[in-house]
Length: 167
Image 1 (cartoon, rainbow, N blue to C red):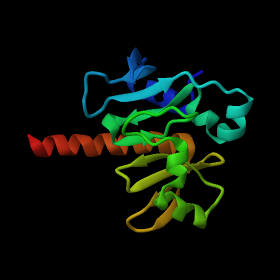
Image 2: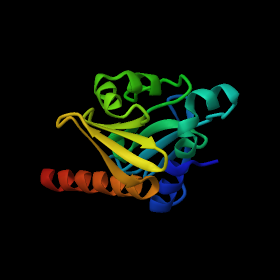
Image 3: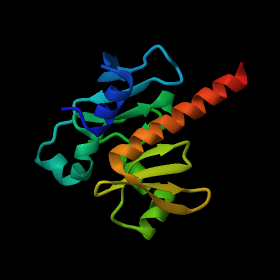
């Protein structure tokens, strides 16, 4: 079952390709684009132990463990002990000094994604939150699905702008 991330990516880019990356079955969108490719590693099992530990992420992840989005601009932390170079494990992300600062402001947040080790994204209920570590500001972005979709568009646009500047 695809989670919210997989559903949003499929709506934006069409059906993904299946591949093996980092020894994990992977759904890949925009595989031909270095700056826009997105990957979700597959195989998450929502057994009792995982539900207790990671249940807050089930809607977001579905059958995925995590993975890089928009050419790695956004990194969805991996669940259930899966380790992939360049992506935080969820426990590492939760223990990051910046995330700990944000959790002091609101301990109910469940952080799951970072961008450039500056912006950290969390879910609380059906809302997306962002902690800007440079400004030390925590703010609610809004409804989860709408805001994750908008976040992907923002990072795509930023990547396209950088590509144009290099040309």
